[in-house]
Amino acid sequence: MALTDKTPYKSYTPDDTGLINWTCDENHVWHDLITRQQQSIIGKAYQGYLDGLDTLALPTKCVPQLPALDTILQQATGWQTAAVPALISFGKFFDLLANQRFPVATFIRTREDFDYIQEPDIFHEIVGHLPLLTHPEFANFTHIYGKLGQKADKTARVFLARLYWFTMEFGLINTPDGLRIYGGGILSSPAETDYAVSGQPEYRPFVLNDVLRTPYRIDKIQPIYYVIDNPEQLFCLDEHTLMSAVNQAMEQGLFAPHPSLIDPV
Image 1 (cartoon, helix red, strand yellow):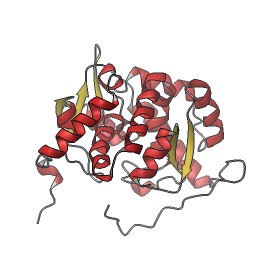
Image 2 (spheres, one colour):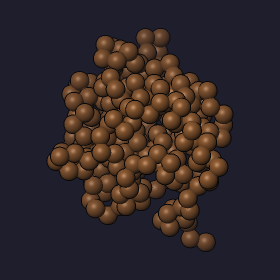
Image 3 (cartoon, rainbow, N blue to C red):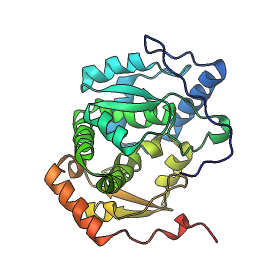
């Protein structure tokens, strides 16, 4: 990805007990992020996500420590976290998921990137993704996805990445109460939380082949969201179905990118 000339983030190495000594400023950023997020998701977040958030019982005054979250996740679904410094390769990502370990970056955004950050930070990972990992079926889908990606070649992994992007990162779901968000990339960004259900983006029905062929960028608000009608659309995806769809998508190639994703010359 293209890096900006901003000050690089400071990643921490946990001590022998898995703990990180966050600064007062970093704890204040966490507090302000999570208290604002708690307000922004009202009437917008998927109930399964909200249930998971309740299960995690995240602190508001300080950045959570990963060992405490591991205890909750292991009791709920057998998962645990894996501390990583920043972005990791597809290969490492799939290896971790295949072993029921979710990567969590050990840095937190600055106020300069308060609304949206293209590099996933600890707020994004914990608040965006860990709640659904307390849900057995979402956790199982993520595990299966990881094992499939672990066996795939580099080209197939790029196509598989789009499935995760348009579901667990930026997925929406139809409910009796209206459109709701389950994607962690949206739910960890108050700005995108409001935008995603505003009626401004393009909403497309979840069609696996279309998802695998849709370009995206990590440094822009999403112009397109794919909407599932129920979680079973994800839970029923098995290895044969996914790899057949990946092979077909690779043969057909990508759709043209949405105009908003093309930088002016």
